[in-house]
Image 1 (cartoon, rainbow, N blue to C red):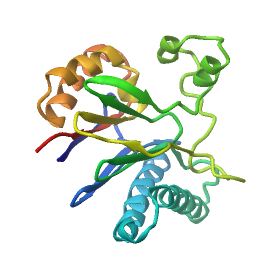
Image 2: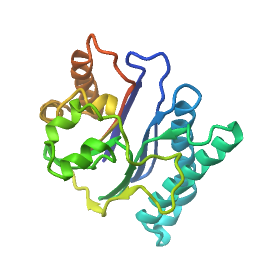
Image 3: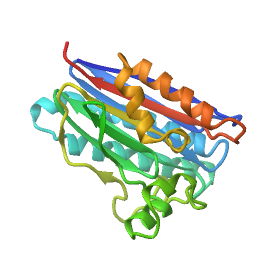
Length: 250
């Protein structure tokens, strides 16, 4: 059985430039989360376009899974069509290269999962209440980690933590998103999709601690949100958004 819960809050900002969307059909679910860049009426528009367009593409494609279309094809189409929609809107508003967003998308079909992302919004996969893997940010600090210049823990407080190396809304000569391999998603698998406004204020050990005692995705997210708010107190908190997904026995 698949269950999920979402949240998206303004944090300390006036406008929420994050956007979240989910679509479930039988034993298939699609989740998307985006964090807009570029200020009001730019980042906000970009993130909502990414969510709306990707869900539209998923709706048109989900019935084709039984006919042989791959999960990779669906996720690729969702990413590419969202990118094109944002570039078109930039031209309409004469805001070339201003309207940008991160995006992370998850597709689960029966007991198989796959995901794609661009930017520094993350997906975590948990199994038996422990982190199994996470996406690698398209950011300057993540690049420094891969080069061995800083540690993983230093990403959250790095001076360049908001400098992205890839995002939707910039011209792509080739696709700039990362696509995972398909992964088994047996019972006791959990997923967390979240923007940097969320993951910067909660460490993985606390994600796992909250997960171990959570009976539902809602329990899990709301417990983690308490930690995010506590750690963000007296700070200029960013918008924060997350999607939690549980795969459990009936």
